[in-house]
Image (cartoon, rainbow, N blue to C red; front, side):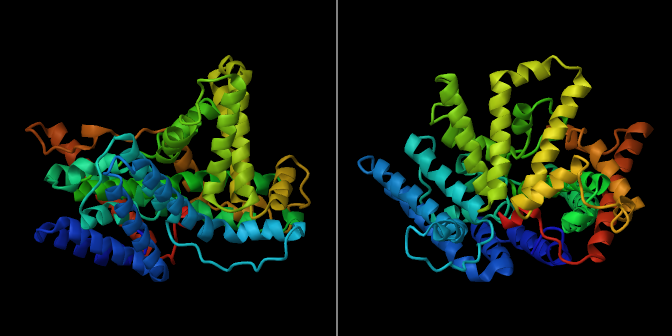
Length: 469
């Protein structure tokens, strides 16, 4: 089940909200709803999610005894990482070891990846580390902890919500009409980002990346890379905004996950704006404990490279994801070593152009099925493609709807979302212009929802990109 589906919008969500606000057991209602949400998409792996819940809850309780806090934390973190390693990386590791011939050939495990395992693994690790550090106290209620761990708005694809971010609202929360309205507006915005922009440009991106190397041209390769650049931002930001909006409707506040990353002036700044819950997680639980930038330049470069190698592998067990992580890690090291100072001296549009170029080139690695395909794509982008433009001309992928989505994506990439009370639409205060502004705002959100709904009604299943991570 995805947020941008008729089933979710008109069946699941209304029923959950009704039960949530009518019944007095909000944590239990939200837990059961979240487990049902997960089971709808991945019933076979629901026991794995339940194991994660019980293991992390029990480890947290055991850590209440200061005599065994450290050992329990280590064992709990190892359990989280062990399950992730088995499900996500076992097949990849076997495929790399077998050709070496150093050991007898191992059978390649055929293990399906549980939905959202990367996200709820990191959640569990941060929970145990925060208890270990004394930042939070263990949650004694299994129902309350299970609700936090399985909460359906962020269960599958984030943002990564740390326990301490919502601990104060677990015992009780009040949902005002204002907060609910804000949540609804943010949700509609995310829905529109997903179905009106991301899904539209996904079609040419998928078709171009599926082309044989011999049909790629300079124009088609760049069009495919640009389409994917817009798609991944609005697909993931759309999901994050829908999750944040749903959280508001339920009385929680989730962390922002994107802050106009494509307007950054450097790769360093880009990572302060892109997938902020993940980059913040790596900063707080890996980069800083490793020493951060407090040691020598060589130590800092080592820490950055390690973080981005793991960031790449976190996204998937593939050499393309590793290469993508290495690409960004190398760029961050280069900027610290002097490239950043040189870029900072450039004219502002050139600084922005540098960032966009580096990010687009990185997304080719992220999207490609193999390093060989990425190499063919880069060759075509450099003008050395094998296509002549007759079999697959760029114009065949760029109709008016795609062009409009690309233009809207480019413009909206530079627009900031309202913050705090910027979302509040107040009733007219007696002045005609204010009443008109309020009416236009409500009408605009309604029109946006109806337009998105029309697209949803006419399309097939369209999962979010980050569902596979």
